[in-house]
Length: 588
Image (cartoon, rainbow, N blue to C red; front, top):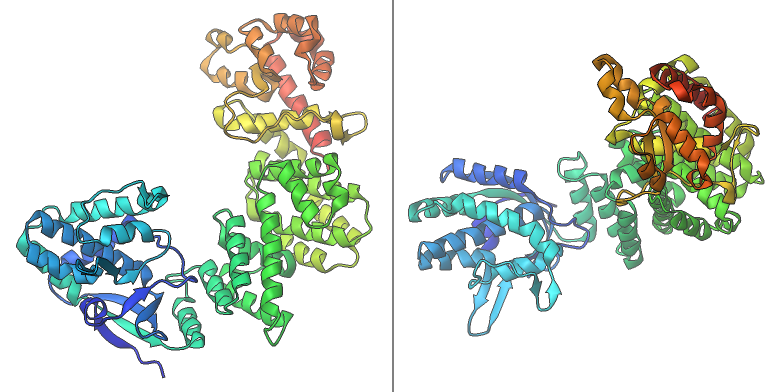
């Protein structure tokens, strides 16, 4: 029977020879200033009164070293508080007080040259913590200890320690004594468990309501309870692939094969899924983790923006027809790049299900391209241009993902998907009004404008299809760290002309109808020339065309207007641009 007991911090850290450690299944130390500030202020306000600090769960299967199942964030922080208090005692020359504090931090023996910390903290701060725990620590934070760089550990601990040091720097001896007594007498409810089954069941029950842990922590606990090094390694790779959004990855994994679910129900549903795979839970956990890893690889590549990483994933996923064809994997990556630009993620599980089902089907590759590009076009029209909420298709996508994942008739399911998206697509009038108003030149829209010209330039209006393979000239480049790009956005009617117009007319200069995308080197030559002079310069040397095919269409449509280009022409081109965008380039 598990019996909770009340214990003070003094009893936990000094009243026993027991040491404590953070087991591998626990998350890293991640408390920040807000949690720290709340704890310190609570201790200051308590003024020697008993303060309750919550529940601690210890695995006592090793009587000399308790594993901290729950409470490591608080215990680690309390140890850092004791270090800051010890350093303040040094400054006050309170050596007796300093020596009374030290046992809360470590057991130090000068004769044996040992300093055994009371808590073996999380790996992400362990080296610097043990360095600070030494009674002779001088307050420095070296970048290396024993030749090993600890810059990340210092970046985590130093701000926390500085806050603590600043909180106590005005303490006199009485203040220090009062605060230490308050911390010693603060109490917790300790739950001790002795076997692995109890450890994880108690851990799960005390955290399942999300008070301390999220879905990732709970699932990690469940997977690690199977005590399999291979599973733990796979989990580490899954976390890396999540790119900092593990809860979303886990939800999307479920959606990709099981349909819509609320986040609050996800953990228990995933556990039941393991049992569904194997009721005896012998192979179920291995199959589940491998499936989750497979999805995490996709989740990573779909956001990578790198066609080579996408190529490698298709090769790894045993789809060599795609991985061996540069046009194929590059074309798919362009969809991924677009969705990343749009900040649309709810399509990820659906896309995974489509690729999963396509792999097993006999459909031709153009069906895959058409479906993925339809998803891109839908989100461009409805979300990017018309500003509709991104989750208007979330439930529909989830339902479709489940059906497609399980289907034996992929062609029919894809037809249904595209039909519904066509029905949900914004009407032309709504698109046109928003396109003209929203696609304007400003710093925020530069990537979007590059994307739009990329799709316009690489669309064959006669064949009503995008260009393929080596015919495609990539204009939109999602890399954020480029200081110079091959193509620049040019105001055809130079902005210097704004001085001749009223204030309510000035926004016309930045509309899509007045923008050209040209090579960077051409842009530097254009300067503030008139529209006619710019056209003469473009036509004087083919270098200004480069691979910008859309310029031919622009020249043919508006040649008669270049001599008198102004606001009316900008408005006319903006309208024509939007109609062509809706009815041709982003048509589905």
